[in-house]
Each structure stands twice: as C-alpha cells, then as structure tokens.
Length: 507
Ligand SMILES: Cc1cc2nc3c(=O)[nH]c(=O)nc-3n(C[C@H](O)[C@H](O)[C@H](O)COP(=O)(O)OP(=O)(O)OC[C@H]3O[C@@H](n4cnc5c(N)ncnc54)[C@H](O)[C@@H]3O)c2cc1C
Ligand SMILES: *[C@@H]1O[C@H](CO)[C@@H](O)[C@H](O)[C@H]1NC(C)=O
Ligand SMILES: *[C@@H]1O[C@H](CO)[C@@H](O)[C@H](O)[C@H]1NC(C)=O
Ligand SMILES: *[C@@H]1O[C@H](CO)[C@@H](O)[C@H](O)[C@H]1NC(C)=O
Ligand SMILES: *[C@@H]1O[C@H](CO)[C@@H](O)[C@H](O)[C@H]1NC(C)=O
Image (tube, rainbow, N blue to C red; front, side, top):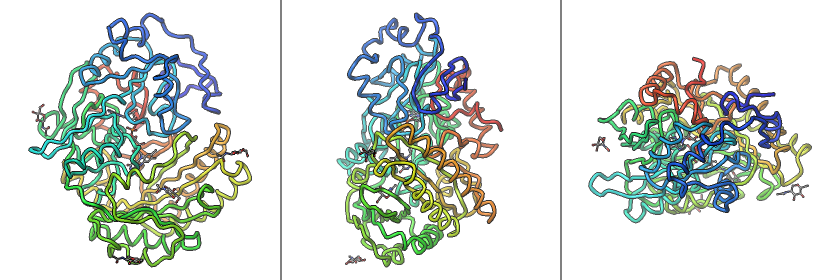
C-alpha cells in the first residue's frame, strides 16, 4: 500500500491511484453521521450541497481543466457569498473527513483542487466582478475565469494583471503568483492585489491589506491556500488599451535563432517593459505534423511591430495570428484544450541560450520517442521559455513584497515549463516517466554549466516538486508564522488537503 501524500494519514488508497488515477479507495468511511456532507445538511446548508447522483455534480466534476484531476468527492458544496463560505467553514471544521478547495479548477495535478473521500468547496458560483471608480480597484470573486473578468472590466475601460489563457481561474492564479502580459509594467499579478477578503478557519471574515492584517496580505501573495479562503480580490487597475500581439510559429530549423532572441529580449525587458514574449517548442499533430517553434509576442501599448521584436519579426514564420485586439480577445483566442491527461514540470534557469538550445534538442528526441510509444494524435507537447527579468521582483518590492523569493535572484532568469497532454491514464504514465527524466536531465545539464536558479513556480510545477521550499528560509518561516497565527487549529494544513502545504516543507 502507498500513502497518497495529498490525503490525510488513514486514507489508504490502492496503488492503482498512483498508476492510473483510478480512485479505488479501500479505507473504511469515518463515522457517517459526522461526515461533512451530513453535517452541512444538518446545519441547514443542504441547498448548497451537490451529491454524486445529480447532473450539477457531474457538470462540476467535468469542469476541471485536466482530465486527471477530478477525484469524485462525497459531495460538493457551492457557497454563493462570503457569509456562506464562513458558515461552510465553521461546519466543516467540526466534521470528520478531508476537504478540498477549488476556484477555477485549472491546476493540472490530482490532489490540487479536489478530494475523493471528502467534501470539495467549489467557489464557482461566486462570480461577481465590479469596479469602483473612486478607488479605481476592481473587486473580483474567485469563481469567474480571466476571460470573463477582462470582458466585464472593458465596460469601465480598465484592465488587470490576469491570466493569459481566458479559461484560467482566479483564486489559485492570484495566490500562487500569476504571470501576465503586464508583468514588465506592474509585476506579478499577486503584487497587484490591494486587498484580500479572507474567511479564516474559525469563520471570521477579515480584510488583508497594507494597513490591516498586513502580514496576511504579504503571505497570501504567493503563499497559496495555507491561511484561509479568499472570497474577494481587490485589484489595482490600469486603462484598457488595445494590445498588439498573438501567436506565430516558425519551422524547427529556426529554433536556435529564436532562442537567442529570447535571451536578448529578457536582458532588454527593462527597456521595453510593455512588451512580452514566450517561446514554445511544440508538437501538435492537430495543426502540424512537424515540431514547430511557436511564439507569443505582445505589445501592451498596441504598437504594431514594436521595436523590441525587430530581430524576432525577421525570422520567417509558417503561422501568423498577430494582430491588434483587446486583452479579452487575446485571452479567449488561445485556450489550451481541456479534458486531457496532463503532466507538467517547471524549473528556472539563468538567462543563457545554451539551456534553451539543449531543451529544444531534448524535445526533438522526446517527441520521436513518444511517437513509438503513443498512437498518433493521442499526445501533444509544449516546451516553453518565458522571461523572469529582475524587473519583476523590483515591482514586487515596490508594491509591498510577496512570498516568492524572486527578489533573492539577482540575475535575469528564464522560466521553463514542459507540458505533455495525452488521452488515457496509461499514456499519462508513459508521459510522466518521460517528463520526469527530461526535467532531471535538463537540470543536470544546467548544473554542469552553472546555470541553475533554485526557484520553482508554484502554479506550474508537478506534484513531485517542492515550490514553497524554493522560496527561501525567510519566506518559509514567514508563511509558517502567519499560517499558525490565522489558523491556530491547522485546518488549512490538516483538514483542507488540496494544494501546497507549508507543513510538508522540510526546511
Ligand atoms: C491552460 C493554462 C494556462 C495557464 N496560464 C497561466 C498564465 O498565463 N500565467 C500563470 O501565472 N499561470 C498560468 N497557469 C497556471 C495557473 O496559474 C494555475 O493553474 C492556477 O492555480 C489556476 O488557478 P485556479 O483558481 O483555477 O486554481 P484551482 O485549481 O481552483 O485551485 C488550486 C489551489 O489554489 C488554492 N486556491 C484556489 N482558490 C483559492 C482561494 N479562493 N483562496 C485560497 N486559496 C485558493 C488552493 O490551495 C487550491 O487547492 C495556467 C494554467 C493552465 C492550465
Ligand atoms: C484594509 O482593511 C481595512 C479594515 O477592514 C479597511 O477599512 C480598508 O478599507 C482596507 N483597505 C483596502 C485598500 O481595501
Ligand atoms: C504553443 O504552440 C502551440 C502550437 O502553435 C499553440 O497551440 C499553443 O497555444 C502554444 N502554447 C502557448 C502557451 O503559447
Ligand atoms: C509590420 O511588419 C510586417 C512584416 O513583418 C509588415 O508586413 C507590416 O506592414 C508592418 N506593419 C507596420 C504598421 O509597420
Ligand atoms: C488515439 O489513438 C487511437 C488509436 O490509434 C485512435 O483511434 C484515436 O482516434 C486517437 N485519438 C485522437 C484524439 O487522435
């Protein structure tokens, strides 16, 4: 028997869970009458509870982005307001059994946002997006998706630092960091939250901002779900302008040339903070039988052919979807397909072309090996690099600081992400084995050249990685201290099992 590390001790599961994501539980249920679902009903909250037989339950389990993450809880509870979140938390704090939390349900690893034998708190019905013309803050509940937020805020001609894919959720993104096309101008998305409204483990509702519970405000910027449930994010806004940007793709043979443009762009990002760039070695037989080097360019001021992209735009392309458009249009134009089995790994490196070139070569080999193991059309890959210039952390420090520890990284860096999508759990196992090895090999290569940066992005990494540990001892201690202060019963360490837990960090 294995002990699946995202379930509490005692919830013993068949090894099948690890091998195929089949949710075969062998644990005997804890005392039925004190289980969370019964207790919610006993407290008069039955209207918020979805049971497995209902269509609504089936729809919500199907609404997760990755096919490998729904774990089929005993019930789902859907509060509609902050007060209802508070009532739900008070009941579940006293009930038996584990609890999971989800906002958008976009995280790709099983155990990040759902639970098998237990209750999942689903914030998907809290979808308000409002704008206050006086404070110029946008108030966003955790339940909508970024595409909805941009569309709604367009009515007021403002925008926020949100996700680049319109389907991405709010709560995980904003508490985990949040990289947007606006990071060069305003820093990471978490640094643009002026105030978090939070339901604590005892049901209290507090505001965490620069002048009230400021330790909790700082901790929630990157410290994820370790402290409470955020029920509203009040974000700084800026005028919504049309941007110029989109996806283009070049032949694989242009890879080394584009790799050098990424390094140069990253080093110059402080001169052109309104510009964003991502490069993407990708195999997607739905659009091309060859590996392509796709890239995203964005000028958030809407300047066509902005000069920061001069060298990039000289490289011939086979796909070109770059145009002048709104952020809402951009976000809703590139939705990564849902309902597939996902495996992601992410690391960070010094801004050096050798790492990109090596990753590109390794990706060629990966695709050719996968072709012999998984039927055509059943897998896609992306091997992405994006800039993490020191500029981002400078914005963060100016805005009050966050938990990520990027201010300790003194050189421009590259954030690397590899994603592998497959159709079946058996194929996912093959993908997992390949990407585990890929990540380890690329890390060894970087080590051998002195190019590692000991930092992991919580919102991208695999469940076997350790992002909170990479935030550094000072921030680990800070997260621990704030978690203990606002959650003295350790509800968000022990009972709420989803996501990254500071109590599991051994440092
Ligand atoms: C297709 C795709 C595109 C992406 N694009 C980007 C991108 O452009 N930039 C980027 O930075 N990241 C991106 N990501 C990663 C993304 O930031 C994470 O997946 C993020 O966790 C999604 O947020 P969510 O609300 O859907 O999280 P969920 O999966 O719903 O929740 C995950 C965990 O987050 C915590 N959490 C969620 N809501 C709350 C809350 N209200 N209060 C307290 N804790 C909470 C909890 O620990 C929860 O268990 C992308 C992911 C995908 C799949
Ligand atoms: C900070 O919290 C206090 C106390 O709730 C509140 O009065 C104030 O308006 C909040 N500030 C912001 C920017 O939301
Ligand atoms: C990577 O490129 C593929 C193929 O063009 C595209 O579908 C995908 O959206 C790109 N991914 C990102 C994150 O830009
Ligand atoms: C932008 O560049 C493309 C080719 O790279 C060219 O066709 C187009 O005319 C340019 N547009 C402007 C406004 O400079
Ligand atoms: C996956 O592979 C199977 C077997 O070769 C094939 O029938 C199916 O169409 C493929 N699925 C996709 C989405 O291409």
